[in-house]
Image (cartoon, rainbow, N blue to C red; front, top):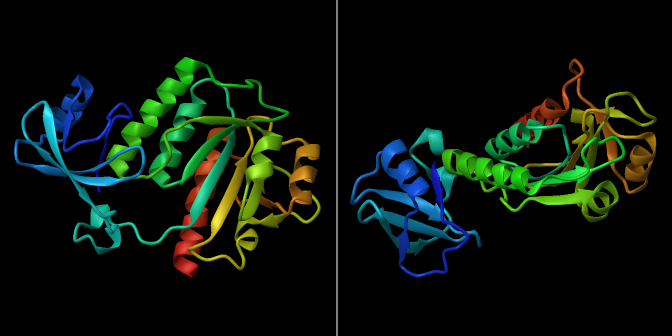
Length: 248
């Protein structure tokens, strides 16, 4: 189910003035006409039935959060999903944009970029953040994802301190007590919260793994070939959702 995201500059009311890029999306891409409706969401995660008044204006009526599990349109179906917070170590160049788009479309609840021992880039430029926000916005509208668009950058220690639920850290080589991903998910169900840590091109240092395990994190491997930094987390997201949503 497509979701139209209201711009963060909107201050409320029963009408919304479309910006030029939004006109291109609604009118030229989705081909909506006056009288057509689409579900809208604001930055506070409130939902509206948005009716196209003309090429510049939407009329908004507050509605309850849509229950996509009851949708007659199978393309808009999304059953119960685990709450996944993905802590992705900063990659080189535009790989971060690829991760953001795919993580959003996969339905991750929050994507946080992390600076770790082996990240070559320790932060993201203002331009990169702006591009990633735009990519997440576009992906959210196309997929109906509720991924947060506020980009946060934390150190590994800060990320580990706030991580909650079952903490998983993907590691490219076997450590003591390392398990396969399916084993790391034992005892969880579709209502569980998961904090997923994914390394950059160099992975995680042994010290970072020890610190994570000291907090109760589970070091896990996936039964695949060695995956790229921008691929590993997305593969894990799909596997986690598939395991928990089908195994219960």
